[in-house]
Length: 571
Image (cartoon, rainbow, N blue to C red; front, side, top):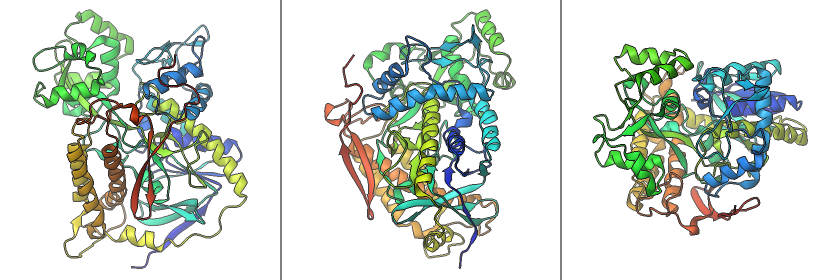
């Protein structure tokens, strides 16, 4: 079957991904004078970007005694000193400018006497999160309202429904991307002088997750194949408690967070014990404690814990609901017969954010010329763990810096490459599963389910052991070695979701292998990387784990940390 390109486009700066990091990068590159194209896996600003699911947290140091330096210290301390400290400082200094732009562009914040009203979240030295004008509103809806307007006003070309397949390289440098138009089923190449990867994380690989199931690590897989170095991929954030029952709200966290922290909910096990209160002395992160309680069998019928507000007087609950306004989730709970005054919700830890990622410098450049990374796909800002309300502002600041840098890289290059590399092998690999009738063909959806089972069994909060991780690596390698047998039964190309999932699975295999090998190599517990056979942190592991491609092998090594700003234990 001979494959051809339906389009061969060009631009100066290409941004792959259209969440807060990608759109901010596109805006800043355009303001720097570059001709910018941004592509999204789904409709632009109506896709599965985690940004549109974001809660109200947005840490930004604005007023004394707080400062970007204090914000950086808090970030590094919670990151357990594995952060790229120069990068953290660059980002915390950029975040106030990001907030100023959001305010100017129409985000609605609560102010008093001309100053933002800020609340304090766990881990902050000072209150640092500006309150939205309407309490209880998901900030993601506001980002989705504000940011797309700005790319339109700056003439950024936005192309939706393009699933990135492979980064294009010439003479060792990235010069664009090969993508599939998932509506028409045709291939598109886009050439660029500079490319910004902003494809988000990979926690959508898990079967049960708080993030979008579309976040399956395509950017990570493409970057790895292109020779990008990755750092600390074993670290991720599992949200302490997301809804598992009632099913209508499975995986949701935003309104649950408001109820739990602002209204003061308590978490009980099946014995009615407020166990979170008396187990904090263990020194373990709360999500690990929750998971241990569930594993011990002291859980709800659906495998969770109980979040209750019954200890509060009814008028206190009613006054809170009146202050935030009547919201849809409240009506839905009432419709299915749940009364917060007396009924508990069931919750459990769930995957939320991948913390490690592409190894970048403080300007967002990777080790591969022509390629930058911003947002959740970039690693180094958060170290081993993250502060509540920190990811979105860090991602936006990274997008801002990377967008400006991409425009500079584009100017340095001088001209967009006029020829494509040979894309025939990539095209052939992409269409191979369609109607594959080879002996022993393996349905691509079965591959995806097998990977999700491996993640569930060996790469959640609990279950990371030497034997389990070695088994996971062996299973993942076996899946990868059978890639040519993968099958998509439906041969139609237009709107073929099974084909899209097969293309996702190709990159999921790579990401799962990186994750399993890194978790196996780091023989300690730190952040939410919890090794049951090595349950304590070790000073021998105050280093970054670096993964990169070496031919057909996955190479893993250690890199020392530069304590350019603050050292462990330093006040």
